[in-house]
Length: 410
Image (cartoon, rainbow, N blue to C red):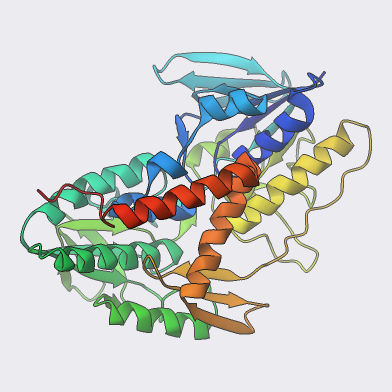
Protein backbone atom coordinates (compact mmCIF):
# COMPACT_ATOMS: atom_id res chain seq x y z
CA UNK A 1 0.00 0.00 0.00
CA UNK A 2 1.30 3.47 -0.94
CA UNK A 3 0.55 6.77 0.77
CA UNK A 4 -0.22 9.63 -1.61
CA UNK A 5 -0.25 13.06 0.05
CA UNK A 6 -1.71 16.04 -1.83
CA UNK A 7 -0.88 19.50 -0.46
CA UNK A 8 -3.45 22.12 -1.48
CA UNK A 9 -7.22 21.79 -1.82
CA UNK A 10 -7.81 24.12 -4.76
CA UNK A 11 -9.36 23.06 -8.06
CA UNK A 12 -6.49 20.74 -9.00
CA UNK A 13 -5.80 19.27 -5.57
CA UNK A 14 -9.42 18.60 -4.64
CA UNK A 15 -10.27 17.02 -7.99
CA UNK A 16 -7.20 14.81 -7.72
CA UNK A 17 -7.95 13.46 -4.23
CA UNK A 18 -11.60 12.97 -5.24
CA UNK A 19 -10.60 10.78 -8.18
CA UNK A 20 -7.89 8.94 -6.24
CA UNK A 21 -10.16 8.40 -3.24
CA UNK A 22 -12.84 6.82 -5.39
CA UNK A 23 -10.29 4.67 -7.24
CA UNK A 24 -8.12 3.53 -4.34
CA UNK A 25 -9.55 4.66 -1.00
CA UNK A 26 -12.81 2.72 -1.15
CA UNK A 27 -10.96 -0.50 -1.84
CA UNK A 28 -8.29 0.28 0.79
CA UNK A 29 -5.61 -0.25 -1.85
CA UNK A 30 -3.74 2.98 -1.09
CA UNK A 31 -3.96 5.79 1.44
CA UNK A 32 -4.98 9.19 0.05
CA UNK A 33 -4.41 12.31 2.19
CA UNK A 34 -5.30 15.95 1.50
CA UNK A 35 -3.41 18.63 3.44
CA UNK A 36 -5.20 22.00 3.36
CA UNK A 37 -5.31 24.82 5.97
CA UNK A 38 -8.82 26.03 5.07
CA UNK A 39 -12.01 24.30 6.16
CA UNK A 40 -13.95 24.88 2.91
CA UNK A 41 -13.15 24.83 -0.79
CA UNK A 42 -14.12 27.75 -3.02
CA UNK A 43 -13.51 27.66 -6.76
CA UNK A 44 -10.83 30.31 -7.26
CA UNK A 45 -12.28 31.89 -10.44
CA UNK A 46 -15.31 32.90 -8.32
CA UNK A 47 -13.45 34.57 -5.45
CA UNK A 48 -14.43 37.93 -6.94
CA UNK A 49 -18.07 37.03 -6.17
CA UNK A 50 -17.19 36.55 -2.50
CA UNK A 51 -15.58 39.99 -2.45
CA UNK A 52 -18.67 41.51 -4.11
CA UNK A 53 -21.16 39.78 -1.81
CA UNK A 54 -22.84 37.73 -4.54
CA UNK A 55 -21.37 34.28 -3.89
CA UNK A 56 -23.75 31.64 -2.54
CA UNK A 57 -21.56 29.86 0.01
CA UNK A 58 -24.48 27.71 1.15
CA UNK A 59 -24.71 25.98 -2.22
CA UNK A 60 -21.30 26.44 -3.84
CA UNK A 61 -18.76 26.04 -1.01
CA UNK A 62 -17.46 22.55 -0.22
CA UNK A 63 -16.66 21.31 3.28
CA UNK A 64 -13.40 19.34 3.13
CA UNK A 65 -14.39 17.31 6.19
CA UNK A 66 -17.71 16.17 4.72
CA UNK A 67 -16.34 15.69 1.23
CA UNK A 68 -13.42 13.56 2.43
CA UNK A 69 -15.79 11.28 4.34
CA UNK A 70 -17.91 10.77 1.22
CA UNK A 71 -14.97 10.15 -1.11
CA UNK A 72 -12.65 7.99 1.01
CA UNK A 73 -9.64 10.23 1.48
CA UNK A 74 -8.24 11.70 4.67
CA UNK A 75 -8.36 15.46 5.26
CA UNK A 76 -5.72 17.11 7.46
CA UNK A 77 -6.32 20.78 8.26
CA UNK A 78 -2.76 22.08 8.20
CA UNK A 79 -0.24 23.90 6.01
CA UNK A 80 3.09 22.72 4.66
CA UNK A 81 6.11 24.05 6.55
CA UNK A 82 9.02 21.95 5.27
CA UNK A 83 10.21 18.93 3.33
CA UNK A 84 12.82 16.20 3.81
CA UNK A 85 13.09 14.36 0.48
CA UNK A 86 15.55 11.75 1.69
CA UNK A 87 13.28 10.70 4.55
CA UNK A 88 10.12 11.29 2.46
CA UNK A 89 8.73 13.40 5.28
CA UNK A 90 6.55 16.51 5.30
CA UNK A 91 6.68 19.08 8.06
CA UNK A 92 3.17 20.39 8.69
CA UNK A 93 1.72 23.17 10.83
CA UNK A 94 -1.83 22.95 12.16
CA UNK A 95 -4.27 25.80 12.82
CA UNK A 96 -2.91 26.23 16.36
CA UNK A 97 0.65 26.70 15.09
CA UNK A 98 1.81 23.27 16.27
CA UNK A 99 4.19 21.44 13.93
CA UNK A 100 4.25 17.71 13.22
CA UNK A 101 5.67 15.28 10.65
CA UNK A 102 3.94 13.13 8.04
CA UNK A 103 5.43 10.37 5.91
CA UNK A 104 4.59 9.97 2.23
CA UNK A 105 5.37 7.62 -0.62
CA UNK A 106 4.25 10.09 -3.28
CA UNK A 107 3.77 13.82 -2.79
CA UNK A 108 1.67 16.16 -4.94
CA UNK A 109 2.06 19.93 -4.44
CA UNK A 110 -0.96 21.88 -5.71
CA UNK A 111 -0.92 25.12 -3.71
CA UNK A 112 -1.63 27.52 -6.60
CA UNK A 113 -0.30 31.03 -7.05
CA UNK A 114 -0.82 34.47 -5.49
CA UNK A 115 -0.86 38.04 -6.79
CA UNK A 116 2.48 39.60 -7.67
CA UNK A 117 2.95 43.04 -6.13
CA UNK A 118 6.25 43.43 -8.03
CA UNK A 119 7.72 44.78 -4.76
CA UNK A 120 5.73 47.98 -5.24
CA UNK A 121 6.06 50.07 -2.04
CA UNK A 122 2.98 50.15 0.18
CA UNK A 123 0.95 47.55 -1.69
CA UNK A 124 1.03 44.87 1.00
CA UNK A 125 0.03 47.41 3.67
CA UNK A 126 -2.65 49.40 1.83
CA UNK A 127 -4.19 47.05 -0.75
CA UNK A 128 -6.45 44.02 -0.52
CA UNK A 129 -5.75 40.77 -2.36
CA UNK A 130 -8.03 38.00 -3.69
CA UNK A 131 -5.70 35.01 -3.52
CA UNK A 132 -7.81 32.98 -1.08
CA UNK A 133 -11.35 32.76 0.23
CA UNK A 134 -10.18 34.36 3.49
CA UNK A 135 -8.80 37.37 1.61
CA UNK A 136 -11.94 37.63 -0.51
CA UNK A 137 -14.10 37.58 2.63
CA UNK A 138 -11.88 40.27 4.16
CA UNK A 139 -12.43 42.40 1.06
CA UNK A 140 -16.18 41.88 1.38
CA UNK A 141 -16.07 43.01 4.99
CA UNK A 142 -14.57 46.32 3.84
CA UNK A 143 -16.81 46.76 0.81
CA UNK A 144 -20.08 45.83 2.52
CA UNK A 145 -20.17 48.90 4.85
CA UNK A 146 -19.78 51.16 1.80
CA UNK A 147 -22.88 49.62 0.26
CA UNK A 148 -24.82 50.34 3.44
CA UNK A 149 -23.94 54.06 3.45
CA UNK A 150 -25.54 56.56 1.13
CA UNK A 151 -23.38 58.55 -1.26
CA UNK A 152 -20.62 57.74 -3.74
CA UNK A 153 -17.73 55.51 -2.71
CA UNK A 154 -14.57 54.84 -4.72
CA UNK A 155 -12.96 51.46 -5.34
CA UNK A 156 -9.67 51.11 -7.22
CA UNK A 157 -8.62 47.77 -8.73
CA UNK A 158 -5.07 47.36 -9.99
CA UNK A 159 -4.66 44.75 -12.72
CA UNK A 160 -7.05 44.22 -15.64
CA UNK A 161 -6.51 40.51 -15.98
CA UNK A 162 -9.36 38.07 -15.43
CA UNK A 163 -9.65 38.68 -11.67
CA UNK A 164 -9.57 42.47 -11.91
CA UNK A 165 -12.05 42.62 -14.79
CA UNK A 166 -14.50 40.21 -13.18
CA UNK A 167 -14.35 41.95 -9.79
CA UNK A 168 -14.92 45.38 -11.36
CA UNK A 169 -17.90 44.12 -13.39
CA UNK A 170 -19.44 42.28 -10.43
CA UNK A 171 -19.19 45.34 -8.19
CA UNK A 172 -20.70 47.51 -10.92
CA UNK A 173 -23.63 45.10 -11.15
CA UNK A 174 -24.12 45.26 -7.37
CA UNK A 175 -24.06 49.06 -7.48
CA UNK A 176 -26.65 49.06 -10.26
CA UNK A 177 -28.91 46.73 -8.26
CA UNK A 178 -28.72 49.06 -5.26
CA UNK A 179 -30.07 51.86 -7.43
CA UNK A 180 -33.03 49.66 -8.36
CA UNK A 181 -33.70 49.16 -4.66
CA UNK A 182 -33.73 52.97 -4.42
CA UNK A 183 -30.79 52.82 -2.08
CA UNK A 184 -28.48 55.84 -1.91
CA UNK A 185 -25.14 54.01 -2.11
CA UNK A 186 -23.19 54.13 -5.38
CA UNK A 187 -19.78 52.73 -6.29
CA UNK A 188 -17.31 54.54 -8.53
CA UNK A 189 -14.98 51.83 -9.83
CA UNK A 190 -11.60 52.47 -11.45
CA UNK A 191 -9.73 49.62 -13.15
CA UNK A 192 -6.02 50.31 -13.56
CA UNK A 193 -3.76 48.42 -15.98
CA UNK A 194 -0.09 49.00 -16.80
CA UNK A 195 -0.43 47.46 -20.29
CA UNK A 196 -2.08 49.13 -23.26
CA UNK A 197 -5.29 47.06 -23.00
CA UNK A 198 -7.37 45.05 -20.58
CA UNK A 199 -6.79 41.28 -20.56
CA UNK A 200 -3.24 41.71 -21.91
CA UNK A 201 -2.76 37.91 -21.92
CA UNK A 202 -5.85 37.38 -24.08
CA UNK A 203 -6.56 38.13 -27.76
CA UNK A 204 -6.85 41.82 -28.69
CA UNK A 205 -10.33 41.42 -30.20
CA UNK A 206 -11.58 39.97 -26.91
CA UNK A 207 -9.98 42.80 -24.92
CA UNK A 208 -11.80 45.37 -27.05
CA UNK A 209 -15.21 43.80 -26.40
CA UNK A 210 -14.53 43.46 -22.67
CA UNK A 211 -13.42 47.08 -22.36
CA UNK A 212 -16.55 48.29 -24.14
CA UNK A 213 -18.70 46.23 -21.78
CA UNK A 214 -16.90 47.66 -18.76
CA UNK A 215 -17.36 51.20 -20.01
CA UNK A 216 -21.09 50.61 -20.53
CA UNK A 217 -21.30 49.61 -16.87
CA UNK A 218 -19.81 52.95 -15.84
CA UNK A 219 -16.38 51.58 -14.91
CA UNK A 220 -13.42 53.89 -15.49
CA UNK A 221 -10.68 51.94 -17.27
CA UNK A 222 -7.15 53.35 -17.03
CA UNK A 223 -4.69 51.56 -19.33
CA UNK A 224 -0.99 52.46 -19.71
CA UNK A 225 -1.07 53.47 -16.06
CA UNK A 226 1.65 52.09 -13.82
CA UNK A 227 1.29 52.31 -10.04
CA UNK A 228 4.49 53.50 -8.42
CA UNK A 229 3.40 53.14 -4.80
CA UNK A 230 0.35 52.66 -2.62
CA UNK A 231 -0.57 54.81 0.33
CA UNK A 232 -3.49 55.00 2.74
CA UNK A 233 -6.53 55.79 0.60
CA UNK A 234 -4.65 56.45 -2.63
CA UNK A 235 -2.48 55.04 -5.38
CA UNK A 236 0.34 57.11 -6.83
CA UNK A 237 1.14 56.54 -10.51
CA UNK A 238 4.52 56.77 -12.22
CA UNK A 239 3.49 60.22 -13.50
CA UNK A 240 2.85 61.41 -9.94
CA UNK A 241 -0.95 61.36 -10.18
CA UNK A 242 -2.90 60.33 -7.08
CA UNK A 243 -5.94 58.07 -7.51
CA UNK A 244 -7.97 58.16 -4.31
CA UNK A 245 -10.28 55.37 -3.13
CA UNK A 246 -12.07 54.01 -0.09
CA UNK A 247 -10.96 50.46 -0.97
CA UNK A 248 -7.91 49.43 -3.02
CA UNK A 249 -7.57 45.93 -4.50
CA UNK A 250 -4.39 44.54 -6.05
CA UNK A 251 -4.97 41.89 -8.74
CA UNK A 252 -1.93 42.40 -10.98
CA UNK A 253 0.26 39.51 -12.08
CA UNK A 254 0.93 36.19 -10.39
CA UNK A 255 3.74 34.44 -8.61
CA UNK A 256 4.00 31.53 -6.20
CA UNK A 257 4.64 31.70 -2.48
CA UNK A 258 8.23 32.26 -1.37
CA UNK A 259 8.33 29.07 0.71
CA UNK A 260 8.21 26.96 -2.45
CA UNK A 261 11.82 28.01 -3.10
CA UNK A 262 12.91 26.40 0.18
CA UNK A 263 11.73 22.81 -0.33
CA UNK A 264 14.91 20.80 0.10
CA UNK A 265 16.52 21.97 -3.13
CA UNK A 266 13.62 21.52 -5.56
CA UNK A 267 14.12 23.69 -8.66
CA UNK A 268 12.05 26.84 -9.07
CA UNK A 269 11.84 29.67 -11.61
CA UNK A 270 11.75 33.46 -11.14
CA UNK A 271 8.04 33.29 -10.28
CA UNK A 272 8.75 30.68 -7.56
CA UNK A 273 7.00 27.98 -9.59
CA UNK A 274 8.36 24.47 -9.12
CA UNK A 275 9.94 23.06 -12.27
CA UNK A 276 8.52 19.76 -13.50
CA UNK A 277 8.98 17.49 -16.48
CA UNK A 278 6.36 16.69 -19.09
CA UNK A 279 4.80 14.05 -16.80
CA UNK A 280 4.36 16.56 -13.93
CA UNK A 281 7.15 15.02 -11.83
CA UNK A 282 9.58 17.50 -10.26
CA UNK A 283 12.88 17.73 -12.08
CA UNK A 284 14.89 16.45 -9.09
CA UNK A 285 12.58 13.94 -7.41
CA UNK A 286 10.41 11.42 -9.26
CA UNK A 287 8.20 10.88 -6.20
CA UNK A 288 7.13 14.55 -6.07
CA UNK A 289 4.54 15.92 -8.49
CA UNK A 290 3.32 19.49 -8.96
CA UNK A 291 -0.08 20.62 -10.28
CA UNK A 292 -1.72 23.83 -11.36
CA UNK A 293 -0.36 27.36 -11.10
CA UNK A 294 2.53 26.28 -8.87
CA UNK A 295 4.07 24.18 -11.68
CA UNK A 296 6.25 25.25 -14.60
CA UNK A 297 5.27 22.45 -16.97
CA UNK A 298 6.85 22.35 -20.47
CA UNK A 299 4.89 21.52 -23.61
CA UNK A 300 6.11 19.90 -26.85
CA UNK A 301 6.16 23.25 -28.69
CA UNK A 302 8.51 24.78 -26.12
CA UNK A 303 5.82 26.77 -24.32
CA UNK A 304 4.60 26.22 -20.76
CA UNK A 305 1.16 25.35 -19.44
CA UNK A 306 -0.63 28.66 -18.67
CA UNK A 307 -1.85 29.44 -15.13
CA UNK A 308 -5.56 28.87 -15.79
CA UNK A 309 -8.26 26.93 -13.99
CA UNK A 310 -8.90 24.72 -17.01
CA UNK A 311 -5.22 23.75 -17.10
CA UNK A 312 -5.35 22.79 -13.41
CA UNK A 313 -8.51 20.71 -13.98
CA UNK A 314 -6.96 18.91 -16.96
CA UNK A 315 -3.74 18.23 -15.07
CA UNK A 316 -5.66 16.77 -12.12
CA UNK A 317 -7.60 14.39 -14.36
CA UNK A 318 -4.43 13.40 -16.20
CA UNK A 319 -2.42 12.74 -13.04
CA UNK A 320 -5.21 10.66 -11.53
CA UNK A 321 -4.99 8.35 -14.55
CA UNK A 322 -1.19 8.30 -14.45
CA UNK A 323 -1.15 7.25 -10.80
CA UNK A 324 -3.10 4.17 -11.83
CA UNK A 325 -0.38 3.38 -14.35
CA UNK A 326 2.44 4.24 -11.97
CA UNK A 327 1.14 2.05 -9.16
CA UNK A 328 0.85 -0.85 -11.61
CA UNK A 329 4.46 -0.40 -12.69
CA UNK A 330 3.60 1.08 -16.08
CA UNK A 331 5.26 4.07 -17.75
CA UNK A 332 3.59 7.45 -17.29
CA UNK A 333 2.37 9.55 -20.21
CA UNK A 334 3.17 13.27 -20.60
CA UNK A 335 0.60 15.96 -19.85
CA UNK A 336 -0.51 17.89 -22.93
CA UNK A 337 -2.68 20.92 -22.24
CA UNK A 338 -5.68 21.29 -24.55
CA UNK A 339 -6.58 24.98 -24.66
CA UNK A 340 -10.37 25.24 -24.64
CA UNK A 341 -10.34 29.02 -24.91
CA UNK A 342 -10.90 31.84 -22.46
CA UNK A 343 -14.18 33.04 -20.95
CA UNK A 344 -14.45 36.19 -18.81
CA UNK A 345 -17.54 37.12 -16.80
CA UNK A 346 -18.46 40.78 -17.20
CA UNK A 347 -21.19 41.01 -14.60
CA UNK A 348 -23.62 38.36 -13.42
CA UNK A 349 -25.48 37.93 -16.71
CA UNK A 350 -22.90 38.72 -19.41
CA UNK A 351 -19.58 37.22 -20.51
CA UNK A 352 -17.05 37.37 -23.35
CA UNK A 353 -15.24 34.31 -24.64
CA UNK A 354 -12.50 33.50 -27.14
CA UNK A 355 -12.74 29.96 -28.55
CA UNK A 356 -11.08 27.78 -31.21
CA UNK A 357 -7.58 29.18 -30.71
CA UNK A 358 -8.97 32.72 -30.47
CA UNK A 359 -10.55 32.48 -33.93
CA UNK A 360 -14.08 32.97 -32.58
CA UNK A 361 -15.00 35.66 -30.05
CA UNK A 362 -18.50 35.52 -28.58
CA UNK A 363 -20.34 37.65 -26.06
CA UNK A 364 -23.65 37.78 -24.23
CA UNK A 365 -25.83 35.71 -21.93
CA UNK A 366 -25.08 32.46 -23.79
CA UNK A 367 -21.37 32.87 -23.08
CA UNK A 368 -22.17 33.59 -19.45
CA UNK A 369 -24.02 30.26 -19.35
CA UNK A 370 -20.88 28.64 -20.76
CA UNK A 371 -18.85 30.28 -17.98
CA UNK A 372 -21.22 28.80 -15.40
CA UNK A 373 -21.04 25.41 -17.10
CA UNK A 374 -17.26 25.31 -16.56
CA UNK A 375 -17.90 25.65 -12.82
CA UNK A 376 -20.57 22.95 -12.94
CA UNK A 377 -18.11 20.60 -14.66
CA UNK A 378 -15.77 21.13 -11.72
CA UNK A 379 -18.62 20.31 -9.35
CA UNK A 380 -19.49 17.25 -11.42
CA UNK A 381 -16.07 15.77 -10.62
CA UNK A 382 -16.61 16.45 -6.92
CA UNK A 383 -20.25 15.32 -6.59
CA UNK A 384 -21.57 13.69 -9.75
CA UNK A 385 -24.31 14.95 -12.08
CA UNK A 386 -27.17 14.08 -9.73
CA UNK A 387 -26.17 16.50 -7.01
CA UNK A 388 -25.04 19.13 -9.52
CA UNK A 389 -28.50 19.09 -11.11
CA UNK A 390 -30.09 19.53 -7.69
CA UNK A 391 -27.74 22.46 -6.95
CA UNK A 392 -28.66 24.16 -10.23
CA UNK A 393 -32.38 23.85 -9.49
CA UNK A 394 -31.96 25.15 -5.94
CA UNK A 395 -29.86 28.04 -7.19
CA UNK A 396 -32.53 29.14 -9.65
CA UNK A 397 -35.20 28.98 -6.97
CA UNK A 398 -33.09 31.07 -4.59
CA UNK A 399 -32.33 33.62 -7.31
CA UNK A 400 -36.05 33.97 -8.01
CA UNK A 401 -36.93 34.48 -4.35
CA UNK A 402 -33.94 36.43 -2.99
CA UNK A 403 -32.39 39.77 -4.00
CA UNK A 404 -29.15 39.71 -5.97
CA UNK A 405 -27.17 41.51 -3.27
CA UNK A 406 -26.85 39.50 -0.07
CA UNK A 407 -25.94 42.41 2.25
CA UNK A 408 -28.26 43.83 4.84
CA UNK A 409 -29.83 47.00 3.47
CA UNK A 410 -32.06 47.71 6.44
